[in-house]
Amino acid sequence: MIIFSRYLTIFFLITTSAFFPGSAAAQPSEQYLIDTLDLLTEKTLEAYMLEDYISFYQYFAKKMEPVTEKQHFDNAFIKIYKEDLGNVISRKLLLEKSKLDRDFPVLVYKARFEKFEPVLITVNFANEYDRYRITRIRFDRVYHTD
Image (cartoon, rainbow, N blue to C red; front, side, top):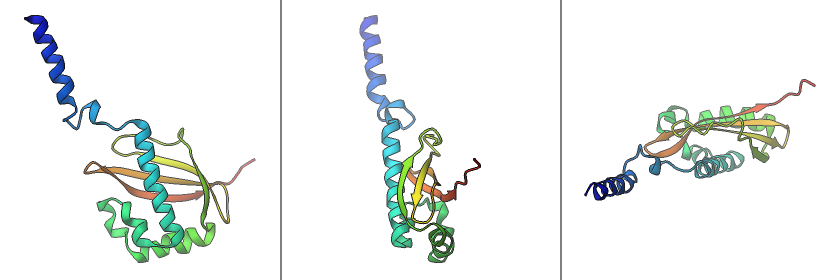
């Protein structure tokens, strides 16, 4: 009877762990997390290149609403980044510089833009109601000190 009880307990723990958000079973795999965040980044960068502020802010966190207006997009992303850097030509994820925290992940890319390279693209995310959303995206020129 004790053996049956142990098996029943183990079975209960395994089957119920999938239903509790804090359990290991409910956590996305690291690769799934990377792929999900990378897709959000890709869609946001596509909107940047099209100068489509509505699509650009589509994946931003709710708390970022005060800065998700056309005027902010035009001033920060078009008049500064787009005029200085141009469009994104290519990007490569720098996993060693990224942070894969489940609540506040950060992806860092080394990118080539039309007018400058290399540029670091840093994208901060937040887990908002079990969906990842962008809280900040920035482009930083990298100057060599060789």
